[in-house]
Image (tube, rainbow over all chains, first blue to last red; front, side):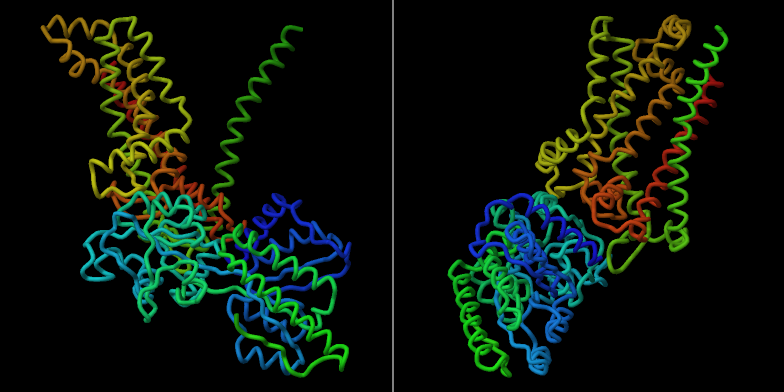
Length: 334
Length: 292
């Protein structure tokens, strides 16, 4: 099932690159050669792959390979020095930091976009004020199939009416992410809902049905604000409605998360990698939107760029002084 | 010389006939072979008795019944619309309408069958459904009722035209005998002509049914994509055809069990229409004996 999604993502990346391949002009240094190994999260993959495709148009001689081993699998390779860049849909874990230290790998963490999911109901729905994560789990987990069918089974005061569920199809990354965040296991959900890869079908379905409930990428909600009602989600700290700011500060959890790339210091010295990262940060706002994610605020991208340049300075200084460093350069924070 | 020419023409004609037969056989073969490997993994009893159809999800269920009920429900609604209307139109055109009207109305009616089904589907979704929602408050945006009604309108010409032909073919003597007994026009139409033409009418209904069962675009657009074992016309359902579209257009890898489900669904659809054709054939024969 994952595999399908990758193919899908690759296709969309192809499509994107073929649409806008001419509007990039970063090759001030001229043509570079070399290869860049990237691996990691399937969620970040569409962004990275889109960037890589665009980058190929600018630097055709640099071979960028983007693998999809999942965030954990990606870090495993990254900590062994097998990859130059690791895609991650969560910050690196202590265990993984340790593994990197053991292998003398220092790195920098750069955020590239936000991934946010919106839970939506019909505008005529006047009973739902928010959902708790438990309620969503109860509604969507596999054991709910054929059992949780009415609104009042979620909360007793809600109407005794059938609930009509809409969600992305199993080939979509949004589906994987939702199930992972809500049910706790990627790809595990009930199957008796209207599942469509076409977000328009979901918008049509929810907007025409008083008893509907659905979810899809927050970016797509922005385009259909007038037809749908956004519902806040309570993860135990009060109901939070998704917006650019709540997604950004992480309070809209667990349905939003920042997406990262991690860059290996030894790779950072290479000119082709530097040019790729610069290209990535410059094009991330546009490309992340195209693949359905939320871009960081523009000053945030400037910060990421500054962080990257600072990292380059440290790395090149260290290389001049004693080859490689013992301490991982893991700058945190925004 | 002439006989060679005749032979060539004959063989061309034969080849044309052969191609259609071979195509049918090829389709049956593909359906059978692919669904055979499906049924070696999923038992037929599970396929027929399981009440859920979720082959693409983590908890896999392979019960075709939700798709079958979805298909039958939309088809039933369509026939409920098309049969009374089509038959009334046929009787009107045959018995009441002046010749001029009949000559113009019939081709115009047949235009209904020429409207692209994707247009009908769109019509159902954006016109009929909102209209029905203003009458039935609990109606979902995707439901069986709206595409069913629109599909019914689409198949009206099948019933009205063919039934009209059947009515016109009823021997004049029957009609005259009825009038001679003092029957009114209405009595003659419904008590004499319709029963006499019933074999043709039933054939037209079966043809319309088969068309409705296999109809894809209207239900794919307006009926929803949620397999649901229900005969409630106000909620989203999924028909067999919609499911096949959904999977064919999606990203299911070829050769996987998920992929083979479309052949299992396809052969079910084929079995349904095959059954209908046989019933029609049987009824046709039986009633013909009775009335002619």
